[in-house]
Amino acid sequence: MRIQRSTFEFLVISAILGSVVLVTSFLGYGAGTLVILLWVIVILLRLKRKTP
Image 1: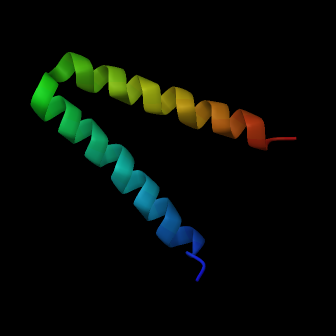
Image 2: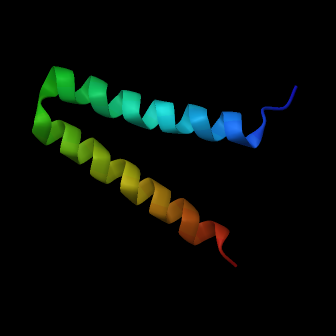
């Protein structure tokens, strides 16, 4: 069974937001900011790799 693209994007966005909320609630705003920066770097690297 293959996951549709829209469902996959929804799951990815949910995972990103969930991880940010989880880290922020347990470790504080500084750690939440670091997780946001980490996700931004990962997304930018993936976009850079996909473009020909």
